[in-house]
Structure formats: structure tokens, C-alpha cells
Length: 480
Ligand code: UD1
Ligand code: CA
View 1: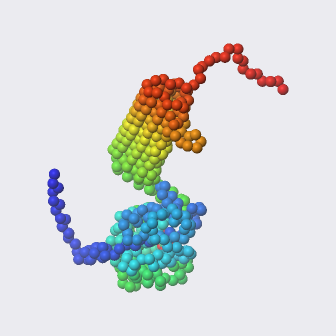
View 2: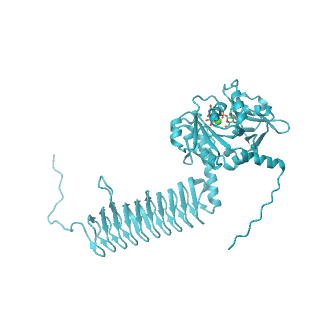
View 3: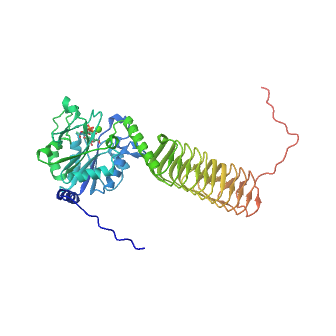
């Protein structure tokens, strides 16, 4: 079928708007993330910007959001714990600038400026403000339009923040830090988030002109706002819609608050996508979750990495799923730990099952309690319902693995594979010493230790015959 030709959207724009948008197109964006602070209040040997939020370092959240803008360049100003930071965030596109001594946010930004062309706009971000949305930043960049823009937030309690001072007409004039503010200025509830967009060329001059004659003896980036205003430049404010989006992390308490906020947001996303959550407050997503229709997730389930759940999948309480793919109509019973594996459709897994990396369960497979599967394929319709280790095994279709079966895959030096062909029946308590093959339709007697291939369609036993010793008596304790 031919696609109907799309009607061109009529563009009705003011001259000012056109000028603004063309200015945006003309100025590439250099992002600078300030991340040199020590984070003393974390009381941790891990640098603040590497503390994990939803399983990912704070700085990585900021880097990921910044990359969504496809900036011309990405700079990180680092200091404390620099080696660890650079070893963790390894994107080769990052330009690293060392701020050896922490002399303030203005001084920090100055370290990155030599690498930024005069024609760029500079978007300043912070390594400890992780939940900013890319859409907000896009809006902020568009607002700057070659001049300045500033992200602010109205706070019920702005204690500790820099305050945004506006004139009678609502135009931003300057920022004053809490410690330098008068009592009247401290009553202002509009706080500086620190996030701003500035033109590189004048910014270099402003930063060079900063002075540290303030309450903290630091070079404040915030002082450039008044400098720009003095030069008749426009500072466009954008007021953030949510406090969490702009919240910085200074201690473990704030980290937990952001974690809870993010968790609630991700739970809401999952429910909007159609999932039923037994308790949204006990839903933990630390990565990416792809959901089919009518998925049910019980309480205390933890998702890490990328997890994909097919239509009508049910996940019981207290499960951990990390980098998993689960097919439609599969039921995961309570207390399973499932990692880097795939499960087909109509399977039943758990309770208390463990999938280790590279397990592949095909459709209609049953894996029961205390069964561990690693680096193995379990074919369609096969079952291992109790107390079993399937490691390095290739299991065909419609195989029944009895309770307590172990694939002895390791001789202390090398790993070997066990092959169980279609329709085989493994009696309880069998030891399958790899490399070994149980051929199609074979039956293995309970308690056998199988060291040689078992032929198709026959019963193989490998255990001593039962006998009873006549006249035997239990030993008795010797008198001392
Ligand atoms: C800063 C702002 C304040 C704003 C607040 C928002 C200034 C002077 N003040 O204050 O107006 O309300 O953020 O949270 O900018 N950093 C460096 N090198 C330094 C100093 C800081 O890299 O020498 C980094 C820190 O790692 C951190 C960020 O800059 O990511 C902010 O530093 P911080 O000391 O927390 O600034 P605030 O005093 O909170
Ligand atoms: Ca701060």
C-alpha cells in the first residue's frame, strides 16, 4: 500500500522565535559536569559521584542524560577519587579536566574552558544531581538561545541553596549564596539549581574576573549571572516542575530519598504500561524493564540490568531478576534468583529456583524448588522439579530429571558437558559424570553414577546390587 503523502505542517512563527531557534541551531552545546567535590557528608571511601542510585553511579546517570542531548562535547571536572571515577566511567568521548584543589564552582568550570570553542554554548551540570530529565535540559538550551538560561526551583525550605534575585519586572538580576545573603534575601524561596546554559566566549571572561571575597572564600560560578546582567545580557529562567528532578545528593539520607522517588516513578511507569503491581512501594527497578501486556508482579521483586517480561508473565514475591528474558504465560514462583538467562513461554520456575548465567529454558519447561541451572539448554517440555544441579548440560525435549540429580561437570580442572537426549528419564539421585551422553529415550536407574554413555531406549543402572548381611551387629561403645 502506498503511504499517503504527508501534508506539510504549517509553520507560524514570530520573527523573534525564528531568530531564537536559528541561534540554537548555530551554537553547538558543550556539556560540563562538575564532579570534583569530595562529598564528606557521605562518610564513605567511595567518591560521592560513584555512589549508586538505582544500581548505577550518580555520575553515570548524569552522563546518560547528557548523552541524550547529543552534545558537541562532554566534559567532566574531577578531583577527589579521580582515578576511581575515571576507571568507572570509561566512555572514551569524555574530556576529563582535573581540579586539583576545590576552590569553588566557578574555579571548577574554569578548568574545562580551555577545551571549549568560543562559539559553543556551555551547559553546566553536576555529578551529584542525577535525576534531571533530558527534556528539561533541551528546553533550557532552547531558552538560552545564545544568551543565558538558568534552571531554578521553588522550595518550601530553600535553606543552604543560592537564592535567585529578580527585579520588580521578574527579570533575573543575580544569585546570592545562603551564607552571603541578607535576612530579606534568605526569605526568597526561589533557589538556584546550579544548572545553567551560557555562551562560551563571554563566560571565559567572566570566570577569569571572578573574585573569592565572599563568606566561603570560593570562586562562585553563580557570580557570573550578575556580570552578564551588567553587560545587558538576558538571563532566561526556567522553573523546574519537580523538586526531585533538581535535588542534589549530599548524604546517604538524601540518596535514599532520591532512590525512593525514582522507585516510585519507575513503578508508576510500569503501571502505566499495564503491569499490575501487588505493592508499588515494594517494587525495585534498577535498570531497564520491558513489559508485555497483563504482567503481574508480586511484592519485593528486584529487577536489575535489562529484564524483558512477555505477556501475562507472573512473578511471585521475593524474586531477583537480572538481565533476563521471560516468555509469555510463564510463572515465576516465589524466591527465585534468575540471572543472565532466558525462559521460554508457558514455563514454571521455582519456588526457590536459581538460574545462573547462560541458562536457556525453552517453552513449557518446569524448573522446581532448589534446582540450579547454569550454562545449559533445557528443551521443550522437560522437567527438573526438585533439588537438582544442571550445569553445562544440553537437555533435549520431554526429559524428566528426577530429584537430586547432579551433572558432575567439573573434575577439579576442566568443565565438561552432559548431554541428555529427547525423552530420557533420569532416576532420582543420579550422578552424571561429564563428559557423558544419555541417549534418546534412555532410563537411568535411581542412585546411579553414570560415567559412560547410556544407550537409547534402555534401562541403565550403575550402582551395587542391594544385599543384606546376615548376623551383623551394631558396634557397641568400648568401656574406658
Ligand atoms: C551550589 C550553588 C548554589 C546552588 C547549589 C545547588 C555556587 C556557588 N552555589 O552550592 O547556588 O543553590 O549548588 O545545589 O555555585 N564542585 C566542584 N569543585 C568545587 C566546588 C564544587 O567540582 O571546587 C562541584 C561539586 O562536586 C558539586 C557541585 O560542584 O557537584 C556543587 O558544589 P557544592 O559545594 O555542593 O555547591 P553548593 O554550596 O551546594
Ligand atoms: Ca551542594
